[in-house]
Image (cartoon, rainbow, N blue to C red; front, side, top):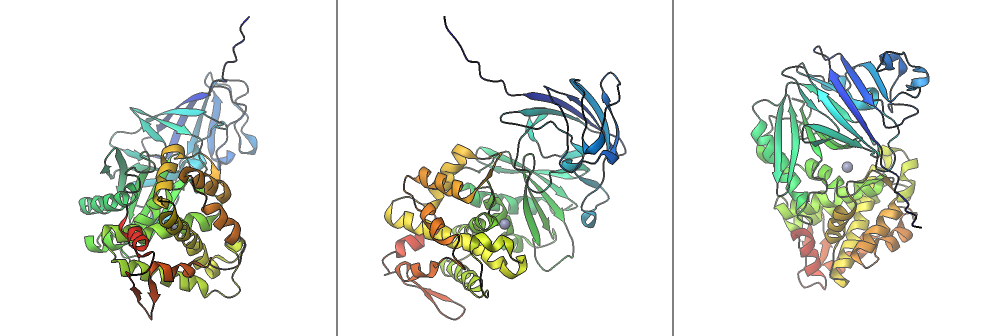
Length: 435
Ligand SMILES: [Zn+2]
């Protein structure tokens, strides 16, 4: 007799979302592949206008849950509330699915097929992966809040080999071409690592915030709630050189080189390292300027009184220790990168490119230790784990300056000088030139 163990089938739920003509409500029909309860991470029962089975039986919605009561088909209507009042525009309603998309728990390979019906003439930007004429939603780390935008806005494409990232441009009329060139340059910076964008399904939202500050790109952030999304606030009137010289977009796209990591100092540190390295590779910074910026940031991180360890920065006051949060991981990245390049004929670029191929985008929250173990294994030579064990719980910035003599970096006032006769000068140059 032959016994066959069948793999448990991944659950697939089917949702149809209809947005009302006045953009005030969503009507959702959910065909469920088994679910005891539906929840939205920030959903409140008080905002549910109705919830019933598809044959009209009212459902219990107490305690911010919908109980399908054994039914495989549920309908509900939810109010759409604007978020980000500060950036409210007349043409676009910005909402979050974390309030109005009520879902079963998405375990393992479970997915939701989503069809969206919009009013005539209305565009949407949603935190789901488009697949043909519908969308698919899978489990995600749930960091920040998934954005769902409805209204009239321009949709641009960031085109790289094997990748087309969708970008919605809000309130930036007349500046679309310039903004697309800026986003493409920054996405290409990150694409160069392994000649592959870490998540070809990621999308971008750009919101014009005229007259906010002197900077071309005052703020950007990555959202991993649903599909991965990067949002930028820009002064769309900025000239192209100012946009291309701004590091924000390269920093945010570089976040996608890693999965969502529990320790902020690691995710921020790696993105900070690459914002400088990649702008040097694009030619925005000279090699000297890139090293000057890195050493300046490291020395500012050293100025913090009684510094916590990188792992303890999370318990400290953010503004007091922010330079450590942004640069202690960068120090570790540089130490590993230099060692790999000098001794092992590999690099941090190589490890990250392999991580992208095997493991990204990842639905999970990773610990720093698990991430470093994986990167070390992918490169075949352990470097990051030992650095983590030595420095993650030791106070202050890891002692990255010890590398400087070998790399040929001399620190002066407000500048650095580079010595091409230093033993690791070729490693130093390769970091900022790529390859
Ligand atoms: Zn960041």
